[in-house]
Image (cartoon, rainbow over all chains, first blue to last red; front, side):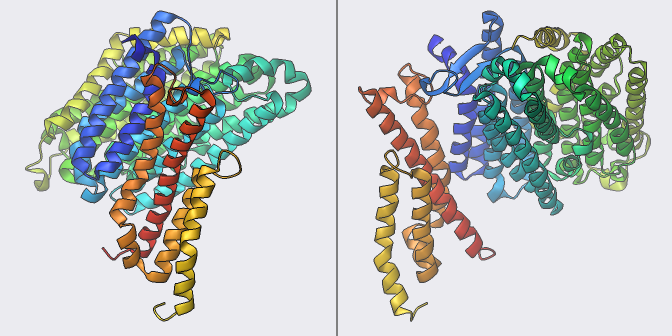
Length: 498
Length: 139
């Protein structure tokens, strides 16, 4: 046991990577799914063990690959912040997979299904790698691993437009990744190292001589990562990608991909540059607040007018990401706690909603709003889960979303930023409208004749949906593993310890 | 190119040397420029040249499409699995020390093996792309 415990950080990335290759070798959708199922649950267990290990040790765990010591070799560094993201991604990946079997069989051609599971595992491997690595360039490599597999997953969507959406994301994603590399390159020139912790320790002494290039690096990194996390004006790739990707891919990506990018942003702002440089030397905080506010309001308004429910949720995602970046930009204890908590809360809520819509697509073949008339009566459990998560997005007390907004409001008040409180409330009210539109159509209209035989999806699809909906409620009441943990992480980040 | 005698004979003469050079680049990668990626590209270049001159059926007899496509993940799997030798013997992931008693030799063996994985994946990927383009819409 102890031998395995030592290697947990490496296994977190290696297991899905090897699983992906095995899944590709089978060339059979069914076998590939079985492999993916085993691998995702084992990696989820691995992540939980990692959480326990980090909690017990109290200091970051360092794992050097290949036995090369730190500044030269690549280091996997696990602390409270990234183990939190890893656990979230691993658990979501594991919960979504049982659902995937029928949904993928329904939406993707049989000869391509094994490819989907390969990409699913590869994407997870990339996301874990991005989160776990302590090396800036290694993070870029894993960013590309996860992005490339994401492009393939999106392109496997059932519409031909999926190809275009995937291509659009490919262009934007590549620009984002390039910006990230330029930023890292400049930092490397300034400090002569690629290790995050090492950069952080060497940067302050170089700030006098190389303050300006360091700011350029920070700007490139911020813009590059914000492209990947779909911050408001850089979000244009997201709605189409989410709307046309296979339902399972959308559910996975909505919960994980943008969240890991947010982690990387946090790492750059708080651990590498430190709060002093990131927020006081240049006005990144103010810029982020403005963009977050724009995201929260504008994207939510667009969501209201969207007829395609998957696109509606995608715009809602852009709006919700605004909450997270707002929390980061506030850069105080309550605000950061809110932002971090929203990473987990939004991941759970949005994954539930996309899974529920995926179940609707599985039954009726479309997710356009007019076709959903009366679906609430035909698929009661699925739509109940959708409504619970929808209430979470609105921020109704008793759901996870309320916790987030509470902390965000506290954070805004601490800054004395009253208008931000108004914006949070306004954005929540707009969420009432777009969630309400679906609820109105689904519950208050009578089902058409075509829906006569429609019922809730099979158990393998229903259970993940209900489980995640239950989690939305659970995290609305017990915040030990969401807000309380995040508060601790926020304290660490603001205290400058990495 | 059935009647292009010079082309056919010339290519037949050149092919083994391309392969030889590919292996040279692979095994010599630790002393000079080169390695698995370059060797893989050359090997795929050889297969593609063969296919261009003699047709896809001939290539299919030498390197069947399903085999080539299976080799794509196989190489990456080899790379990832060689890394696991380290943890198995109590070293870190990707530490090749257990491969030999001499640490420099061990690293050389380890790199040679992972580069073989790279070679397989790169050669197979390029050949698969060629197959995908030329046999598009046929199956």
